[in-house]
Image 1: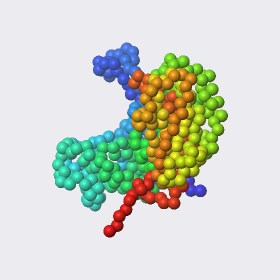
Image 2: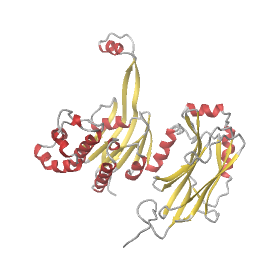
Image 3: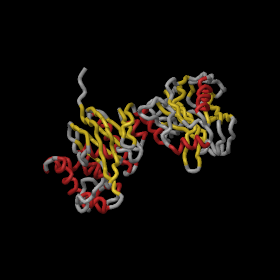
Image 4: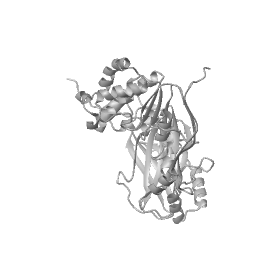
Length: 442
């Protein structure tokens, strides 16, 4: 088997910033007048290892402040690492912060030549590429105006047009596409597809999880400067959702229900939840009698102040099944036991495809179906009934019970990808669902 060639290799990368309480402390240290350390160290990145192979599209996700942009700047040479090493094999084109590498006083065409020269192209080479760049940017006569007069949308159009048309071997994009309009974004993603087919390497940072899931071969998850893991888009997106609610397990822990966020754990403690409550909840779930195809490796977590005990999918005749005929009604059921008083629980379900893209879903708060307090010991039976117009194929069902305690969002119990649903269809149209168009031809 042919050995895969490495495009980017990051080993033990750390980036440390010195934080001073006041400017005078920084000045004293610079002049050597400080007798003791006047700063605190902040690790933007801590011991990050990352290998990206040629031809891969790799996504980097994480909350704000997790170090995503920092690692990209180190890869592109905008920043130097405090510790560690980064090796890059191939010509990089980077679209980082809006305006990076642009002179605000120059017009659009002058900035095209400026950027091209910085990357290493000759004037003749840029002359040849200029028509393609201007056509892709499509900002009309504004190319002759100073870029300081551009809207953010025009700015990103020109910046991306330059980055995408200089034939890079490695393309790095950091959230820039969220600024352009929907038509420009569609054009950029089409270009991504072309790059993938040409075997280019793409490193992609975005909060748009659907794009991450659709375009990336592999995803790296960062949090507070630490690499939590890497894997398929689906695996890392599910883990990221745990991070968002403070319930991702520590790297050296086997406890899949460990709570990171102190505000959530304290909420559970104040409510009087115990470890035994969690154990009983697990027993209840394990004893569920279910005719659907269940996932033996489902992901579950939560404070367990409320627990999903039973769940199933039924067809229009009320029969438990994992197969639904397209166009017919089906019902998603779950039974939830409350181990503590909860002011306003929210019941939810989500349907994803096998790549992890969320196709549809809803909850009782959105539907204004249930907005009541529930007492400890109560069991609620929730049924969502809907017509299934999804295209034929395999889907995964996720269930959840959440709520708000004061202003804090709390996950009481979530079951990710708990059941498999097969939609049977003799007519598949384009996309994820059927619009059931009524057609008239005259």
